[in-house]
Length: 450
Image (cartoon, rainbow, N blue to C red; front, top):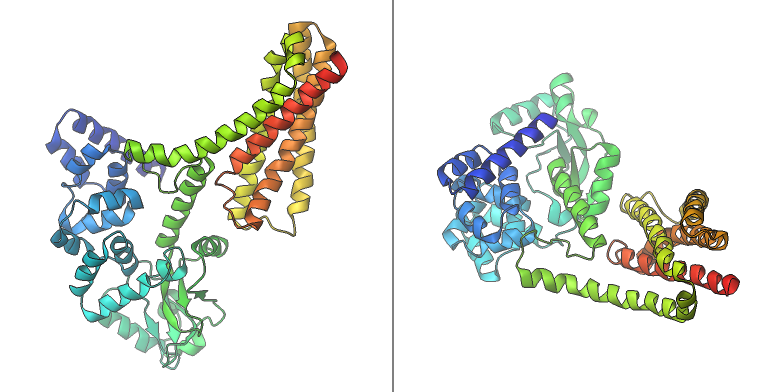
């Protein structure tokens, strides 16, 4: 896998070199050897002007696959430049869930016109997927599940599969249903070819393989696949009727998107932030959280202003106070990231949050004592004042303990009130560590040095 990754990096560098030198024929040849997902990566790495040029190069029969791998913002920008015939051609041969994703990026009129070009069965399947929220099992599923009845033999099933001639991708199991399409269990492909031919499906199937409800959030589905090493799973409605299936390739996309969303949300960015989105769009999205951060910065400055007399008399405090706030911010961010990850993986909840809080505060105490000793020694050499050294040491220990508490408490409280902990959690944390750090350090200095 690492060899393939290195090969793609080399191809990407080669492509970029050709593109920058206007050697379009050579660049186009490199692009032709790439997988649709890799082409999508290349397009997302380009400024908008180059995207318009490069988007004309992929073959018509893979354009839909490339679109399905692009983030929403980039996909929408490219679709706006495509004519309806091109869009119809791009959606041919795609999985139902991928077609639904593309149609949801179009206007209602264009979506209807593309749906009208499909046969009735395919149109109904796409409309079914589009009727569910995009971030649920219904919006994620594909309707290409192969079903069998429990009363037939494995020999009959095998002959049926041979008649089909081709299986949908990522098919590791068939789904057993009754005449009303009620889900009964799964039949593994491995069992079809290894068990006796006269074995019935009812005898060979796994009846305790739980199906996924159509309304289950995609994050829960990703956790389920990860915990049980699932390659595919059935999706059912509230009456246990089989609607479709979800495969591991869909889950990989979910995990990739969630990872990107966590990183961008922690920075206060839009979850689908495009690397080369228009300047005004990017500026507008970022301005909101910059404004929020400005408010919190003024709050921290107000605390400093309370002790302006102390700072004027002891200049060393102005030099040293950023250390206390910075160390608290870093320590709190480490804890915050750990807890947000645990919440995303369902590893943190009401049953273990108190133990996690105690553990993180203990870590804060140990690191506080360690670095307080280091800072005290440096201050003694720098300012030759043991009192300031002791004060900054105490402030450092207290702020690291507070940072650990805030790093656990903030995401848990935000989750409880229905807010995304990744979005804005770091801003709240920085506010707490800055204010507490300045308040303790300058307060102690005022009490003992003046």
